[in-house]
Image (cartoon, rainbow, N blue to C red; front, side, top):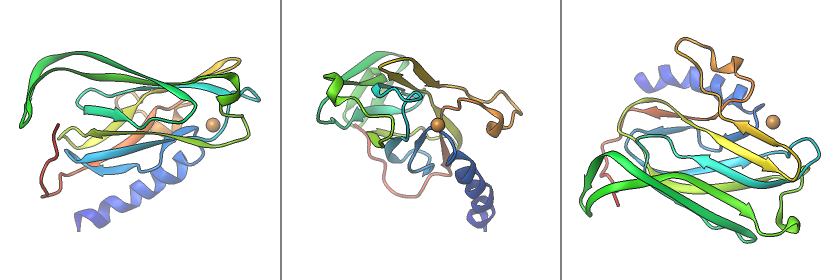
Length: 179
Ligand SMILES: [Cu+2]
């Protein structure tokens, strides 16, 4: 019953987000699950090709690991955690906070009239609710920052340059997959 009630607003969310710019392919996931984030880049900066994509990993997301792309260099930035996390593999004192894909040569950049995807895998936070992933798209000329997050009570549809949104649903009963 709960699931059916949730389905309607989520469909509306998907429909409005389809007009947006850098978005996630899968916009709903279970809290605490292992998630494959597929960031869809549908256009350049005007007619300028995209040469870099920067994803800020939201607080609470653990062990983010990007999928390499042919022709693109990867940078994985880590920062100390506010408090150490203990998993079955040991204690983690730092974690990935930012992932950057950079085209190796101008010829590797994504032309403005083409589409591509940038992928990472990570463990989602255990809490429910919206999880915003700020993404910057750097082009050969100019840049687009998809980094806006709604203030409390603000309609996300009113954002001009929204961050990519993932809605976290109540955790599934399955086993957790921690690194
Ligand atoms: Cu757009």
